[in-house]
Image (cartoon, rainbow, N blue to C red; front, side, top):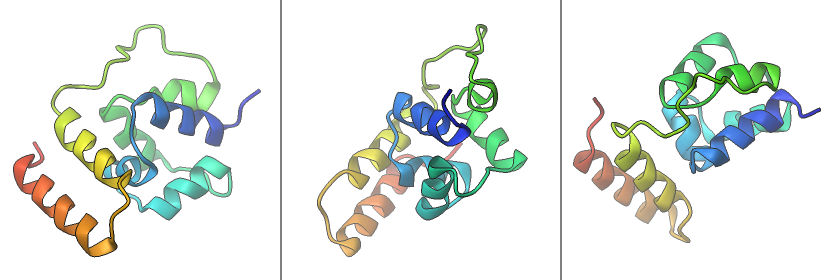
Length: 112
């Protein structure tokens, strides 16, 4: 049976987000996200609540059973900003260039 970390990674992949973008949306850094997925640390309730707001199946992550009533599409309200962040994270850019593009993306897709 898959671990919480493995299921967390599966949800991140299903939502088509990089570790950095997923962690950023959940309020943690990329390294914390990596540790959660490796099972080195356990996410807390605040983290789980946040990832549930952008489409992660928290019930599945915790129990291994899919929530039958959940809509598995990514909410449209977050798609543009998250997709841009994910695309930037996957590019082969210097840190300075990546930060510049992320700052630009944030201005184009303000939260809320």
